[in-house]
Length: 356
Image (cartoon, rainbow, N blue to C red; front, top):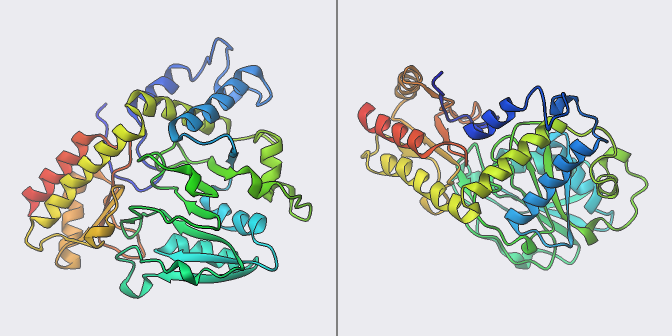
């Protein structure tokens, strides 16, 4: 069976070798006579999967020993609440940078928990760029600064990260593992798996240990990071199959040459599409300003809405799936996460040129 040219924003493409590996062991994992989905999460066989996923992630991202790796459920959307519930005390303020819909939602949830302020925003320009930060505006009451590293709807991405005296919190759901990171710059990183890490169902949280060292007994058990930290994310039944696939994806990343190799490939893939846009004499128009363009989500429009609809219809007939822009902004969006093959991106770029 031929594979689709999958440009969905999430759940998104997974490496074909990962799917084949999971298929091979679907009914009998490690000689147990059971699927991973059927294993007890307290069993030795599953414990090896669980711990291996953590250690492989630590190795690939070079996560220092003073950081915890947690596997949480509820998606990044739950982290919008868990971050302020665990890190925002009554006498502190959570600062937010608005760069799109997901950072707006993160702010909205934090406002239900405690004091918040907007440090910077590009909402007035319809989120075409990443704003310049005036860090002098961070007051002494700052508990943290929250950013969204890649904005799937608008196609913008932080190209570098600020050095702060307060914890930097980053929603990296859509670009984690796409490039090397200096983890020490961050207090906490969270990422829903369904873009670059694996299937939906597990959320990775990487958090500095000293940020979650104080008792927070007033919090509900499953909304307290300490619950996951003290129990190796095994307080209750974790999403075992999602974590197994996460582990397989991490193995694939290592076999691909690690994050530096993936970054080079991601830059190459994005260039094909941005060149098709820039060389179209305005037929295709990118949404993001050039200095803020994302290597994960390429967003663009055509001259009219009818042109956009006709383009999307023609693309679908050629096997290109998931190119519709987010319902809130329309247009087109090609999500080219790690697992999207270079050849698929090349085919899309050629189609864009031919269609024009």
